[in-house]
Image 1: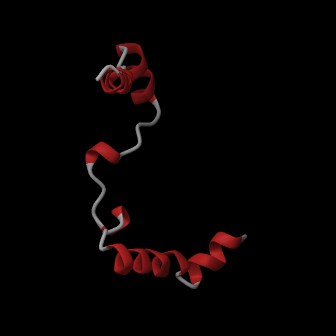
Image 2: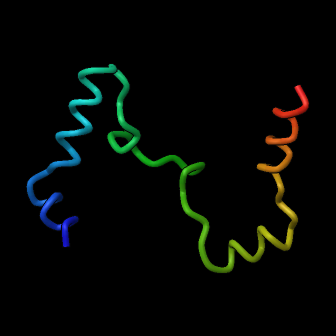
Length: 66
Protein backbone atom coordinates (compact mmCIF):
# COMPACT_ATOMS: atom_id res chain seq x y z
CA UNK A 1 0.00 0.00 0.00
CA UNK A 2 2.65 2.53 0.99
CA UNK A 3 5.03 1.84 -1.88
CA UNK A 4 2.54 3.24 -4.40
CA UNK A 5 2.07 6.43 -2.38
CA UNK A 6 5.80 6.88 -1.80
CA UNK A 7 6.57 6.25 -5.48
CA UNK A 8 3.85 8.64 -6.64
CA UNK A 9 5.28 11.46 -4.52
CA UNK A 10 8.88 10.49 -5.42
CA UNK A 11 9.92 10.21 -1.79
CA UNK A 12 12.79 7.81 -2.50
CA UNK A 13 14.15 10.00 -5.30
CA UNK A 14 14.12 12.97 -2.92
CA UNK A 15 15.95 10.96 -0.25
CA UNK A 16 18.57 9.89 -2.80
CA UNK A 17 19.13 13.52 -3.71
CA UNK A 18 19.47 14.52 -0.04
CA UNK A 19 22.06 11.78 0.54
CA UNK A 20 23.94 12.81 -2.61
CA UNK A 21 23.99 16.49 -1.67
CA UNK A 22 25.13 15.76 1.90
CA UNK A 23 27.74 13.09 1.15
CA UNK A 24 28.68 13.56 -2.51
CA UNK A 25 28.17 9.82 -3.12
CA UNK A 26 25.99 8.95 -6.13
CA UNK A 27 23.35 6.28 -5.49
CA UNK A 28 23.79 3.07 -7.50
CA UNK A 29 20.27 3.48 -8.86
CA UNK A 30 21.45 6.47 -10.93
CA UNK A 31 23.77 4.30 -13.03
CA UNK A 32 23.11 1.47 -15.44
CA UNK A 33 23.04 -1.94 -13.80
CA UNK A 34 26.23 -3.85 -14.51
CA UNK A 35 26.36 -7.55 -15.24
CA UNK A 36 27.87 -8.21 -11.81
CA UNK A 37 24.71 -6.87 -10.13
CA UNK A 38 22.22 -8.82 -12.25
CA UNK A 39 20.09 -11.38 -10.40
CA UNK A 40 20.61 -14.99 -11.42
CA UNK A 41 17.30 -16.82 -11.77
CA UNK A 42 15.81 -20.11 -12.88
CA UNK A 43 18.04 -22.73 -14.46
CA UNK A 44 21.11 -20.54 -14.03
CA UNK A 45 20.84 -20.89 -10.23
CA UNK A 46 20.80 -24.69 -10.44
CA UNK A 47 23.71 -24.70 -12.89
CA UNK A 48 25.75 -22.41 -10.65
CA UNK A 49 25.01 -24.54 -7.58
CA UNK A 50 25.87 -27.75 -9.46
CA UNK A 51 29.17 -26.24 -10.63
CA UNK A 52 30.11 -25.60 -7.00
CA UNK A 53 30.58 -21.86 -7.37
CA UNK A 54 31.77 -20.88 -3.89
CA UNK A 55 33.55 -17.66 -4.82
CA UNK A 56 31.90 -15.79 -1.96
CA UNK A 57 33.09 -18.36 0.54
CA UNK A 58 36.63 -18.15 -0.81
CA UNK A 59 36.58 -14.37 -0.59
CA UNK A 60 35.29 -14.44 2.98
CA UNK A 61 37.89 -16.98 4.03
CA UNK A 62 40.71 -15.05 2.41
CA UNK A 63 39.64 -11.86 4.19
CA UNK A 64 39.42 -13.56 7.57
CA UNK A 65 42.82 -15.24 7.18
CA UNK A 66 44.68 -11.91 6.79
